[in-house]
Length: 152
Image (cartoon, rainbow, N blue to C red; front, side, top):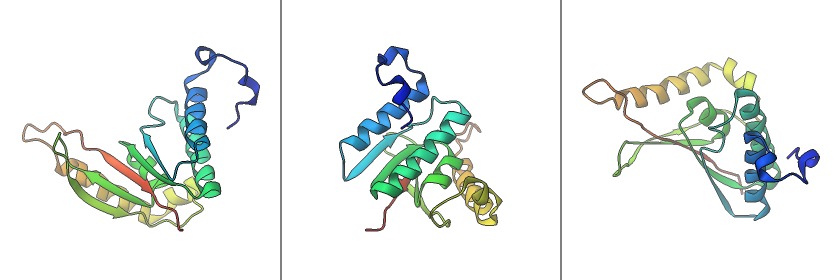
């Protein structure tokens, strides 16, 4: 996870990105059959977020783990997921739509962004989120659940 230089540090001496790396490493160290990640990169700067997304992609490819990840980041969902489950708003949330992500693995961030299918999928996700706006015009908080499914 790229933390060898800080192996002897206390948690309060680690940056947010380092703490996130530790959290992901701890989760994988337990060798779960399914890994649940809830907004794992939300507090990170863009560069660290991209590095950890790439690290998660690498770990999933190596371990063939199934990861269920909650995110509100449409672009992150399209990069990481094989299927995206869009949820409706509220305590009684239900599945609104399921989108199969059309990109083969391994994925390259820049190649995906250049793919016309990316823009169509992104438009579909954003349209779902916009269609769930309240009558007052305020967008309701609609979650995006990104699911990475391994071939087993």
